[in-house]
Length: 332
Image (cartoon, rainbow, N blue to C red; front, side):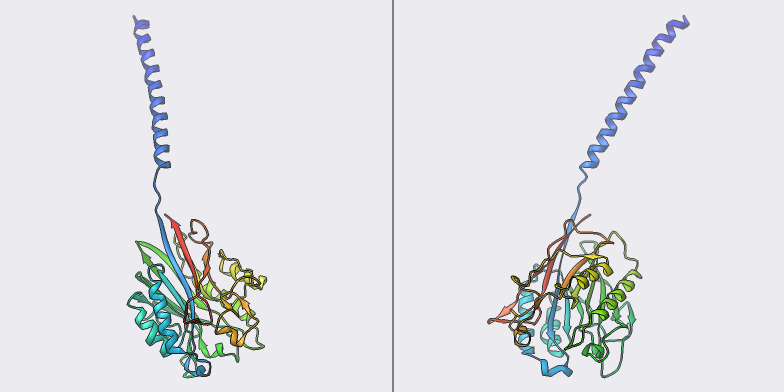
């Protein structure tokens, strides 16, 4: 009797175990299939960097059609507004730039910063300020500002500790602006800057590298989430044709860029093909302006190509620098 009872129990237990294994396998396969089908979200951010060549009043001898160019720059940027989310400006030093370009552009890009170095206190302008900001009446602002279509959650200012003594840069509060922008509920971190320029026989390479280290150390202090993009944009004054400095720029910032330039066949961002540049530098053709993304933070789906644009009016260029433009796409 006991043997007869055990037999059906034995077969039943085998059946149950078998069913349990089959069910587990089916469930595991279902989970794997579901996981492989989980959709991702792809979001974009389009960034422009533009040195608009509006020098301070103290340099009025170098002014060139300030009002006319500012108005034309505004018209150009209005025509591009559906394609650009964020604009990082350099050399927005003077009143013409503010009156005829920046003030009016705020209608289309309502979220923006003050000019770097315009104020040496945070006030309602910045969440924090760092560096060597001078209140001297002989020192002008740094000329950098960031304009965005989307809300800016934080604004931070850095004025460089290092600058070339005796050069015009020494008498400007040049530095960097850092903003956190929220677009479609995702955060993007943007740093805009303008590094030390060369002047006549003065080579600013060593100062530029120190300024890049200042930026990197400053940004590291914000502990930006690795899941958020970090983008650097500006007039770096680093020549593309100087492979050592170009590599050092990327190395110091831990950043990459998808851009190639052949000076014998292509137009750089500061070029003798420019109607303003050619007057003083007829043999110069190089790139100085860049948009890079941090390799320590969220990377784009594919490294987008940085493109050089050429806004003109009546056959004349609107600045001595050509703007650069990058379309970033990130997967979440």
